[in-house]
Length: 191
Image 1 (cartoon, rainbow, N blue to C red):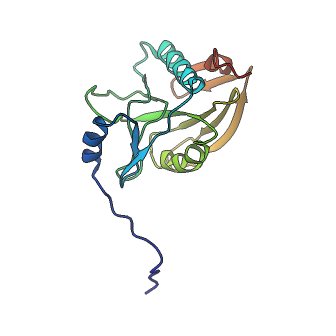
Image 2 (tube, rainbow, N blue to C red):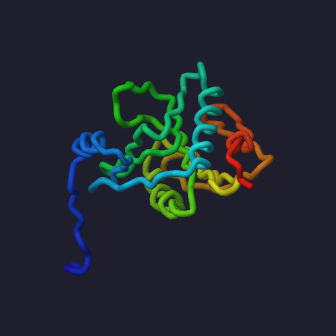
């Protein structure tokens, strides 16, 4: 039969709906991996500054375009019942404000720290690749002005990767905007 008795079968400890209710009552932040809550580590002031810079740059450039940015409190449905909370994302889909997940996300930003790198570069990369609407995944380092750009032309296409650094221009053609990389790191004190 080919059954491997050493493989553990993971059963959900709660549903997505139960997770949302439970998470509202917690002081710490959590994501939902489709089975149970996963604690999100606290970020540094530098991480927070970079996230704020990204959101301000997106909001200023997307105003009046029909597209809008969402921040780290908005959920993104990925694989199965999993819900992630990217640092920033863009959608051009009308989004009911009372919903807990953002539909039609086309661009995702994650700001990575030395401790979150594996999750953002491997686990979330695979989950975001499974979301057909996501065309661009941007991984911003928190220790240097460096952004890894992963892009694809369609849901069934592989990611192509490139890197941007200080002095470069981040182009997001899906929504017709450009942002200098240095603007995203302004005030982050990378010395």
